[in-house]
Image (cartoon, rainbow, N blue to C red; front, side, top):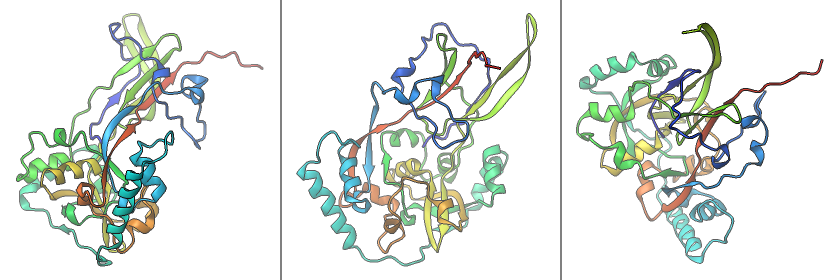
Length: 333
């Protein structure tokens, strides 16, 4: 998951040197089950087929996945071809290793008080608007042993691990905090305009890209004041979050950073920590079966690197598209 935070105002000029991106070439994610949701670009988004998908290397916890899910994942998340015998054997072996593990305690302890040397960074963090919302919601910063934190996300992409740790001193708690609890200035987003459709669109590999609020107001121009309407687009800042539920500690957010840190040999990190009372608040849809991460032999974060219970795969990575279109209609009275 990416941590950059960005804000975009309507009316930003677009360079004529940047050719508009064809919407037909972008994997579209049409909003579902939302009041007022409509097809992107106004008409035929549901019928558009992506020309190609980005493929990224990943690690998957196949030992805890349902057999069919694990085989499909090893097959690149496609049903176009049957799984190979080698893939079936790999899944069966991983599931056996999980079943043979010793049961873990119902309660696990993975957190400790943060050191005094981190207080300077905490002061800066409290001044950040996204972090301030976390503190106001009952989260606080503590030291966490990632090796003792339970995972429920089936897979993580691995190609950004080295970049995430570039220039980071693994022995400096302040440096590690910049990875797990980032405070970053807004960054620009790649805005493009499709003149034929009268449609602004922003494409990002970060799934957190979203239209967060409507915006309207007068803007001075050489011709006088004009009224602009649109939306504020943002990629909200993401923090490493460890939640306590039923006596166990689970990673709620920050899986790709946790993988990068563990891969670099760093396990003690500062993170937001809080007790959570419901499983719905803890785990989003599409994760491992509940019996896997709440059972007697749950996966822990280092297991992504363990070839006896996890495996490498190449998986499609969906891009996130936000499209804002002007429709000129003649309503029937």
